[in-house]
Length: 457
Image (cartoon, rainbow, N blue to C red):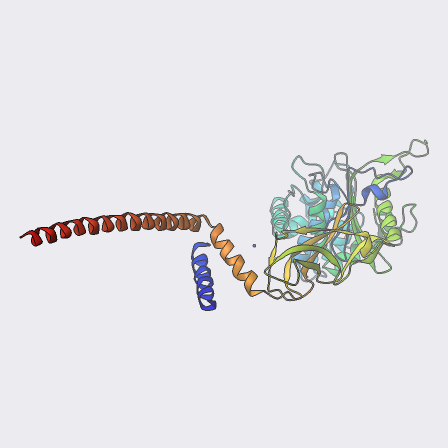
């Protein structure tokens, strides 16, 4: 009997195999109170430590970047120039092309000679549009040629919503980018020590040139200038931007107590707060400080998931000792959350959770993943694994195979066909048996008649 069962199960497995053909939170509501508001059109704060999004508003909206453009200008130059001490000459076109725009410059003159490093300082510290054009012509052969290099670089970095039309950032109809793309560009630029140093300098002393005596340039970024009201000692750089269309803009990064953030704000206004007729409040500076101060004060890395923490159970098949398998976190997970919260403050949202599992299982077998949810927001992902071994029961396994086979439509039809064949065979057997019996009776009658006739003779 056991051999028969084994044969049936093996046959079923073979037949079946022939028949049977792969984190972002957003604390913007927590930041804003009755007295504190974020006023810029675009706000984005990310952690540079784990790339998690902390605050986000309109991060994929295409907007004018103003002089935030110069981050890309500097990046292209740094990619192309191995020797920043090389001297270059300011072309006449670089100066004439911004004449009459009333835009910010660093006071360069046609024919002036200085090192590429000093030119980058003129570009990033006082936000000189003359320096942007000079560098563009020097490295692109023309402004149009350099703009193509900028767009090619953006595409290569993975920017999906960025298009540059100039090297300085003055308003142009299709000169647009997004906060998310600016994060990508800025991270690429920060890989160059010269960019980090220059963009983080609030003053720089330019040496004497063939056209100028030695002079000092001052940053347009009030957050790194200790003599300005918006100064924040945690902020390290990077770049401001302002045009009528773009409004007040700022990309910056900040570090404190081992925590590092990058902020992008765009579309801010200049506001007169004291009624003296002078716009004394830059909303880009204000929003940036609000986001940084809130993050440094409130967010800490906490253990939001413990290794082995129970997440959910899944029905278990073919096991006599248990009817469910417990799934637990495969590893410990840290996340930036308001301090004081821990693994008891989160919930889990399993992804691609199977309807059931089949024994045998071993402790640690991977099953699926689960999102870690805090205050309704995803803050991380963890792998889910089996908490304990589960042995397979042979009889239950055999029963399940038979049930699986019988549940397949092909086999259901086959079984019906066999049943019909059996019934037909039985019917045929009965009919044939009756015919044979009748024939025997007929033969018997004929035999008896023949026998009687023989006796009479």
